[in-house]
Length: 183
Image (cartoon, rainbow, N blue to C red; front, side):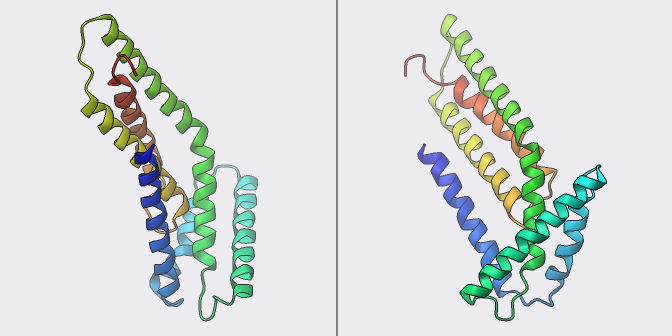
């Protein structure tokens, strides 16, 4: 459990670093100019035009709400964080759409690991606590990287969500497959 908490605390630290970088960055920088085109590019993967328009308007509404909240707090003097918030909202929605598939793949990895563990208990096999812990670390940090990719406007491309899902499933299989016979 501590490994998972550590991975997600690392994730929160990375998200706070990205947010502070966006607050320090001037609004006329090329990075801010790219956020709008990146959001349009991310929306272009949605095949249904009505769903694409609804997702874009929802992302704009979330960005408007955050900007009004930051305006009430008094933290928006000279800041333009509207495009990064739109991009982060679009990325989060696309990652949430992939979440059922990611959960099924992760469950398949856990079941494969438990099957391996059962086969090792029936035969004379070797249960490695080192491999179990390594699988736990890999699964935890892959899940944290999935969350970072979903929530950060500056991060890996969206296709990396598939890589993090498969890595988390392999790590979960390694984790559960090498647990000792008696816990």
